[in-house]
Length: 278
Image (cartoon, rainbow, N blue to C red; front, top):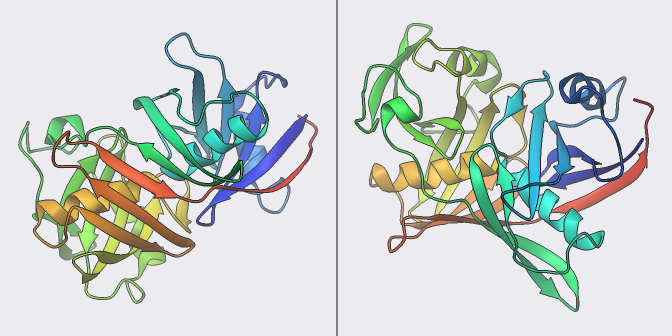
């Protein structure tokens, strides 16, 4: 089976083109392929599939075999794969995801993709729809969350997948490895949650580290960066356009006031290609 390996800000993925390859069990293959010692290694597997609703369909499975609704860094890699490999000649097209139909726009220089800007749609802010228990249809902004005996202030956003944003004084020193799993599986989150630990540098620049649901600590998270930008506005900490500094690179995120859509711009790079036995 042929595959390609991609990364966006260090968030890395195995990509399988299901127009050419047949994977019997998407979940089991993801667990095997993502293993960094016995497999290819990655934070998830992206599957390129046909769609009857959009130009293409993307499914993404985490390292633990669970399926995610969406992945911001992944969709940029997915979009560039389609263009670089001749599946489309359009610079803007539609992709069906578990979070709805999204629209990436390829940025080109001399015919080569230099970055991808994705319309990530509107953020979901109602507690029950994120979901977060106990808030009904109200927004969850600066609300208390107790984790291992300490109370944190959470602001919750869904970008088609759930996010809990925690603003901290020092993102580098926050014990993300010790506490990340406790946030992910907290009873407040019935579908678990991705958690962003965010230090505000100034109104246009934040430092973010992330514990991803089903993948633990990763070098970047695109939907998490979008959720962070929205949370920054909701709490009055940042402007609507912000640079998000991640462990693996930087993304630019803008929450457009006119149409309420979130736009994410960042890199997508092919690392290598190869073959693996299913």
